[in-house]
Image (cartoon, rainbow, N blue to C red; front, side, top):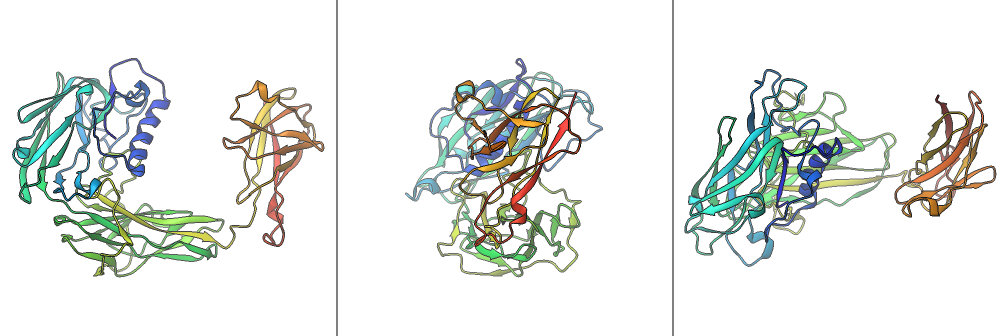
Length: 487
């Protein structure tokens, strides 16, 4: 995640770039980008230029009453920056990259923000003097250091900018404790100055989360219980409350606890629970009760995932797809969820790898007792009479090897496609037995048909064969194929 992601004032690349910006930001967080070790090279233009709607900070949505003049808002910048002391243990010696996100503001509702001209971000690094060494600055994006001052000249900002200005490590003999403030000042030619102060601390917490074994044979519609457990294996306390974010996939949550906020009052899929700090170095806790998930009626696989953050310095702040719940989100109806101490020294308590002071994650994954239940997925052929059209055949759920068979609706026939006429990565169905046989394709399987005549109400079938001995429910191995006439 080193380098710059910005919307500078250059020709717009098209609407797909807006989505790409948010995907790249979150993708890097999920995958664990390594610390910067060399000068970052400029990313391709579509990555940093954004058109359409700018990604908005998840915690503070823009106000409809915002003025029309240009402005900037800092949407992501750590307020406490921990520098772990060298121990010779590799990645744990390096701090989290100090990433800095800006968003242009000041637009009228429904309009793009006004362009902010000649933006400069200055960092006062005097807190590092004698305690930490700056080993790299982001020169390709206009960052230059003079003494204790680092200034990044990032140019005109149209929608947003996100970059890593420097890489730093604590010196081996640096004393543990507060090192001082890092003052950040954002100036421009046509917008008010914006400031942020980050407290620099020598030493760091190492957040951990317990890794639970996956569950198998879970009945659909039954309950799965998650008991989050987290600890601090670092040498420095977390002087903050602890926030645990829970996300349910192919399951819903029960809104049980009043110190937890939920994304909706009935069948929520996200929750955020806050626990009073501090989280002392060397301690670990688990929740005094479980969070209950209800497995979906049609679920095959799923999980309840949780992530532990410092409550008032969240690493996911400012990411457009973080889905941070607002303070007004609905709360649970029961008693508050408490904590109880546990032994967090075992191998089942693990760090995030790259953001050790900022977050840790765990989950309970599950497979249901219907993972061998092959289920065909219906699809619709759309086109005008006389037209040759392509349609993606959805792959059946839980289907393994073999071809899917398609019986086409009356008035529609399969057309063979010469593979040389299509990109090599595409997979096509072959006409067979008056219908088609469709093999699995890594990028989807395409069925080419010609609509010869209109037959209202005509229906075909897509069928996925399976062994009745392991899949006794054979009725859902078939699904309808319909036609939607256009033109």
